[in-house]
Length: 508
Image 1 (cartoon, rainbow, N blue to C red):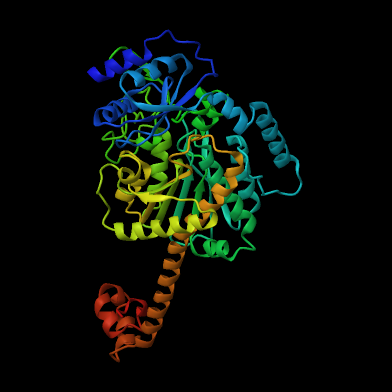
Image 2: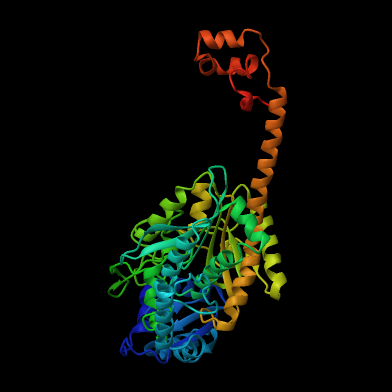
């Protein structure tokens, strides 16, 4: 608490400018070179008010870079603190608003694009399934597009509703494939963190690819035939829409959390109140243990309790409904170019099937890199980025025993300075290479199911060959006692399998 008070007084005691001031936001790249500097940065990461300091990269190791967006009214104080305490640093982005305008366009253009697309969906006689990739769309456009796909392609796609957000939006996705009880399920989601637009675009690209290549791409045909695939492109619609309210204002565009009502906590100096919960710290796996914060104004605020938020609670219930069939779960994030598997709360802590998990991750990273040479690393959170708890993939791995549970952090790389503001010309390549990596997981699931079907077919053939009545009186016994096959099942499998229609239960 003493450190918290020192940090608050040092950084945030200056008179604040108007909260509406969008110009002058800077991104500092800081390099902690001692354990003391690292511990100070970790403490600030866990407690800082995101309206003043927003960590794009969390501090994790000595000599590992930390990217921090600082509001204009606090940049002088922050820089002074870094200089006073001997931090190595540079200003990576001098004016974030200028970068947003340059890379992502102005708000009015996007509003026009959204209106045109919605009108086209509404008025066109013929259905147009293809959404122009390389653009960012509102949740209204995305959800309308999903609905139209389901309406017009009911043979392969079904609209699903995961739940409802705090602000009343439906969390929608698509279910692909012909469902049968024995098929394995794969779930892919994106957008649990509002500002990670590239992840939402990538999930949308996956949907676009499936619906427009289903008749020409044998690989996609294979998936539709042999697995059930769910894709939920925006898990946090409220937060995502908030990031679009003023997309050239870093305070809005860089919002990470949900939009749950304000909560308050004493931060060492005052009672601070802020909206939102980091939904990827709200799952019931080692809740609040590490890499999360109890301060509501922190970007990694975990909420008052596990599954306190309607979004995370509904999603957990949805995933739980698939337990026993859910073979793979992938959640898309940005950025750092990482393929993360469980567990992320403590270093060198793994699930029992870690060798298989690691094998498929390594293969996926290799396949992803073949397309453009993009280098990804794979490992657990603390091995390759930082430790955290309360995440969806760790909860799914531990609770639902999912075989392949992965968090993918997309472009750019950890050392890149532009972070969440990805060049538009990188959106489609990012999505294409990510799909290449994801297909490794899909292939594993599809091929394992096909192999199990082939094996079961062979076993049934052998059972049919072995199926016979060992005793002559089977028909008489069944006529005399119609329930005998059920009541004395094990005996009847041995002696009267054919008469009792129990061939499928013969051990082979």
